Length: 93
Image (cartoon, rainbow, N blue to C red; front, side, top):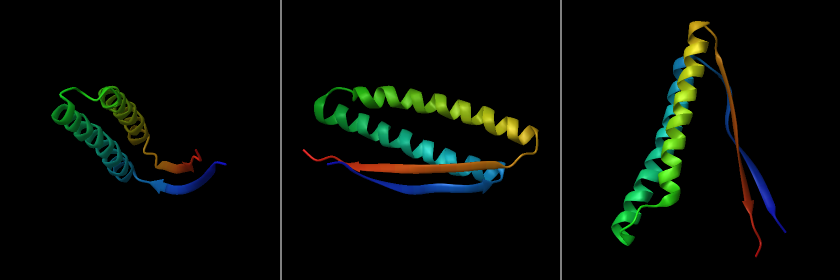
């Protein structure tokens, strides 16, 4: 039987600068996670972590999208609404 819990991570209205800070910190943290994971794999196994190698450029592309969204909102003097949930499932063997 699978059990899923939902956690609210972000839920609110933010200025452009607040939204940028929150989201860039999250993306930077994920990029750092995969960078360290890749480095660790290189040190331990002598090869790059394939998943990390795919995730890092994908996250950088998402940052580019974020920059476009924030630029549009700023140009139109609009606030940003952010909402994010984390779904955690525990899988039974």
